[in-house]
Length: 331
Ligand code: AKG
Image (cartoon, rainbow, N blue to C red; front, top):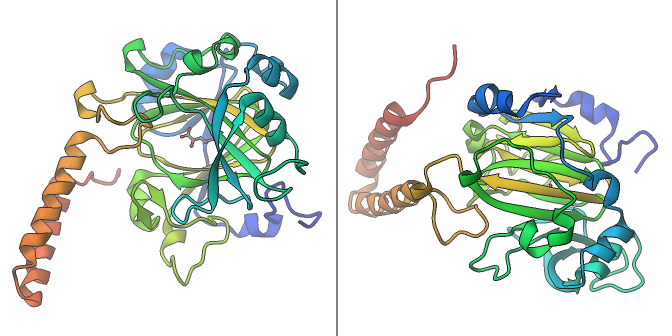
């Protein structure tokens, strides 16, 4: 990395040349009731500063976490490179006792390792039985949970999960969306978050809930020619900041330092809309799943027609869907 580059290896020149970049709005000292009544309904990301998140920002040092967090086994992503890719799976899942893991994730060169001495670690804490239970810091790390206060941004019955996330310096998590509303509480280290509006989904080359474009700062334009049409919303989170990520907003995260965060997912829709068998909060709402199945059947049915007719009637269906469902762009 040159002296001129920032922590993520992007030169000031490259940053200047970026078009389509909007800074995420930052609000300081906003009251929780004002967030709920005025900000939340706008369904846009916002960085909230000055909320009471408890003493965790002061207390959660590496030593403290490894003493108080216990030594239960945690399942980690271990990767040779900084850019983790869920689609090609360029990482391994490995387990370590929590206290051992925290020390490893905080160091840059390892004496003991799985792949090589520079390997990177990412923890996304899971529920007791990861196939059934949601992550809840109060259950999995009860002592640590007493150090963190979740700002009152939603009603108690909407709570879904709270996820402890710990990342080696420079690790980058792929662009994805979640179907729950989310407050990402940054406890330690700086973090760059790039977000994309759900309405830009067509430019993100999606594979399920993830974008195929890994290197969002230097996208392969021969392969992903439309990617730069997506508008980037960017922010750098500092310890103590809370980022509100509305459901469906895509996000890509780089831990600029060794980073500790807790994110809280909560339900925006009625309970009945959510898949009960979804401990991660990333399965599409049930009506969207049903609509996708019906579309699969419609596509099979169109296959009965010769190409010229299939093309014509497919376009008529698309135009009907657009007319019936697309939001009108604001004036
Ligand atoms: C989320 O909260 O959904 C994230 O992807 C955050 C990832 C991170 O901060 O490590």
